[in-house]
Amino acid sequence: MYQRLIPSILIQGNRLVKGKFFDNHKDAGSPRTTARAHNHQGADELLVSDIKASKFNIPPNFEILKEIAKEVFMPLTFFGGISSVQLARKCMDIGADKIGLNTTAIDNPNLINSLAKQFGSQAVVLGLDIIKIDNNYFVYDHRSKKAIQDLEPLIWAKQAIDLGCGEIRIMSVDKEGSQNGFDFNIFNKMRKIANIPIILEGGAGGLDDLEEAYDNGVNGIALGSQLVFSDSNLIKIKKHLKTKNKNIRD
Image (cartoon, rainbow, N blue to C red):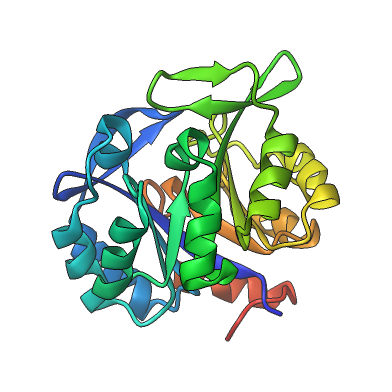
């Protein structure tokens, strides 16, 4: 099984944005043209997060999702504002292949089980935003911009797996946008309790960070800032990783 390279794009309204530490989001272009570029450059999957829907508890931006889905011929995971089976089904009908749940699953854990029954576990991805404070890990709620003190990340992940999620995306909040390397400590902790694929996001900077992620056995690497605010692109990244004999798709 190949270790996947997954562009991760944030949408706010009708625009692509990028920030740092879950804050100070700046316009970064057109979601549609960016998705098209990632598709042409050979992305393994695409991860799209509607941060406005998540923050304000409103339905997803279906029009943007529809535009993006027309541009890509790879698995598409959509996060943001999916609080019911009906909303998830609409996303799937438009073109999403997987449904990402984050705060909506925290508010209603049984939503994981409902979606797994409707679409299969392989179509349900738990978005796990984690922040490290004084060497302790906490689940982070981007709505309140605070750590949830009584929700331990590994326990929550195990519960989500038991409810039927088929994949976990770990986002290191204190690494997001920093480009100073991944948090492999939390990945290794998660791998010990999770028997499903794990995507790691937050902190990718240089090509050496990606090499290290492959060497650590990450199932998928989600890339944001590295593709937006540097001269890297997927063609360059894949060419480099091939020369290092990493397990990537041609």
